[in-house]
Structure formats: structure tokens, C-alpha cells
Amino acid sequence: MKLDAIHQGDCISGMAKMPAASVDLAFADPPFNIGYEYDEYDDKRASEEYLGWSRKWISAAHRVLKPNGSFWLAIGDEYAAELKVLCTRELGFHCRSWVIWYYTFGVHCTQKFTRSHAHLFHFVRDAKDYKFNSMAIRVPSARQLVYGDKRADPNGRVPDDTWMMSPVLPSNVPTWDGFVLRPQDLPDRFPPHSDTWFYSRVAGTFNERRGWHGCQMPEQLLGRIIKACSDPGDVVLDPFGGSGTTLAVAKKTERRFVGFELSKEYAQRIQQRLDAARSGDSLVGPENPVQSAFNSRWA
Image 1 (spheres, rainbow, N blue to C red):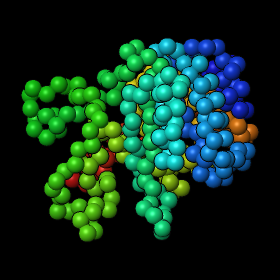
Image 2: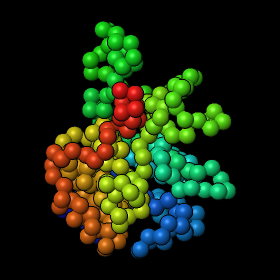
Image 3: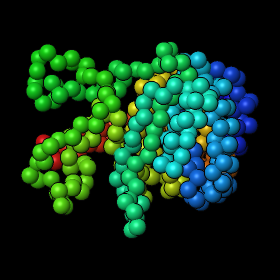
Image 4: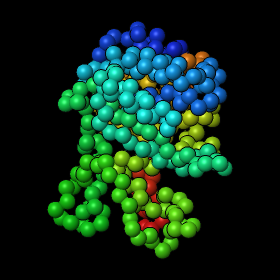
């Protein structure tokens, strides 16, 4: 299977052609089975059919991962629980982190609370032998940012899995009945070292938006995952190419990559995006959106 390429076709048959234990990191953002209108995929399957299909492609991804490889799965509420159980109890993965991606510009709802998050599962094949580059994703500690403590590690700290909340709101933060209206106005609510990540969705008016795919992830979100769980020269796999963000970020961060995309049109557009990307290019968007908003507002 050719590396540094997007292959048009079904990911299950495509991964079957790949050598076993040949991938360092796999990131998958599959269809959520919520009725999204894809051009060549039915996103309205019966639950058992969808779960059976998920079992097949995740098993294929497990086979091509190296023994110390990592697998990240992005999924919505509807099947998050089932797929976590499938991965850990049936297919042999170990869950290292369950990250919540919180975003703004969610689809507005009138009969329920507007959805503004997705689940990001970090799985590994071996619970004791896996790649996690803490130095590549370290964040400033409170000792550095707040207290100016000379004892602070100049390299910052490893991100933790706790969502810390500030009990006191700054006077200039807009609220309604006590609720903060915009998370970027209160950076303490989404610190970069927690397991709740704040990155805006790539909305239609954003420069980052490709315009031809409705489910585009931010480059910086993929950048955090790829930097943490792979090294330059490693192979990154995306079974569902989509808008091509995973592969473009892999190329920019000097990784090898291979992707699959069922839609011929999407595959062609992904190839155009890859042709325009260069190794070493900066990723689009701020690495820490909350901190960037805070600095611009209160600097």
C-alpha cells in the first residue's frame, strides 16, 4: 500500500492490503450514524448493522497497528459507550484517556440542549508499551502563569485529566442567569492541561474551512494528537479521509501517512489539499484557543 497518499475506496478492504503492525498512529473520525448526508455512504443504518460494521473496520485498524501503536477514535454521544466497550472488551485495546472536545458554533437546537462536544478516545494496544511524547504537548503550569514561582519546571507540566473550574467570574465576562455565554471569555473553564479540550468547530466563515466537507476538524486538534502519539517519520493512518485534516497535519509535522476515502470526489479534493501542504508548514489556527482569547482580551 502506497504511503504518503490518499486511497479512494473502502477502508476495510484497503487496510486488509496493508502489512500487519505497520502503523504507529491511527486516527478515525467515522460516520456517527446520525443521518448525515454523505455522497457515497448510508448514515442511517440499523444499530446492529452499524456496530457490526464498526467492529470490522476497528479490527482492521487493530491489525495494522504496531504493538506500541495508538488508536484515537472520535465519536458522538449515540455510540460512544458501545464503541468504547467494543474496543476494550472485545478487540483488546486499552483506553488511556477519554477526552471531551468542546467546540463553539454547534448546530442550534430548539427541542434539546445544543450539542457542543464530541468524544475522543485514546486507545493503545499495549497498556505498558506505547508512545506518549509529553514534552511535545506540555503546557504552562500555574506556578509559571499565575504565581511566578522560581521552583516551576521551565518545561511546563504534563496535561492532566481534571477539568478545573473557577468559582469566581471576572466582572467583564458576559453571563446570563449566571451562565457564561462564551467559553473563550473564561479561560479557566477549559485549561489546556485538562481532558476537556476547547477548539472551535471549523465554521463556514472560517479561513480554515475547505468548503466541500461538512465535518472538518481543526488542524490544531489533530496536531496535539499527532505530536503526542507519534514521532517524525512515523506512519499515521486515517481510515476516513473526510476533509483531509489528519493527513495534511501529518505531512506538515513530518510524518508519513496513508488514508482511505470512500468518496471519489472527497479523495480528489484531499489530494489537492495534500499537494498544497508542505513539510514544516505551520498548522492553521492558535495552538491554545482559550489562552489566545484570554491574552487578546486581558493583555
